[in-house]
Length: 161
Image 1: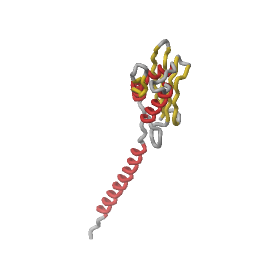
Image 2: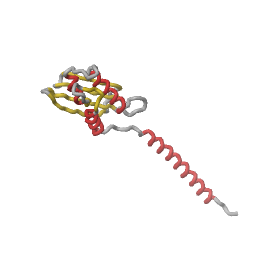
Image 3: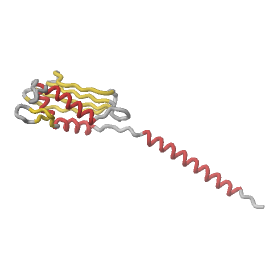
C-alpha cells in the first residue's frame, strides 16, 4: 500500500489558492466600482465660461442683430429692451439658466453638486446671480473680466463637486 498524502496536499494547496484568488477579485471589483467620482478640471470651467459668452441669444437689438451673451450683459446694464419688447436682463437670466442647467447637471448621482454664477459691474453692482445645489469644499472656478463704456464687468463661475 502506497500512501497518496503528497497528492492530497497539492489538491488542498490548489483549492486554497483558488479561494484566495476569488476573494481578491471580489475586493478588486468593489474597489474599482467605488471610485467612479469624477473631478472637474479647471480648464473645463474656464472653457465653459468663455464659450457661453460667445453664445448667440434670440434677443435682437434695434439694428436687427442677435445679441451674444456678452452683448446682452452690456444691454442689461443699460436696461435695454429686445426688439420683441422683452427685458434684456430677463433674457440674460433665462438663457444663462438654461445653458447652465444643460451643461452642469446637479441631479441624482451626478458628480456636480452645485454651481454659482455671478456677474458684477465695477466689483460692486450685481447684474446677475444664479445659484443651485449644494456648495461643498471641493470646487473649481474661473473668472473673466472685460470692459465697455468705462465699466469693468466681472463674471465668475464656480462648480462644486
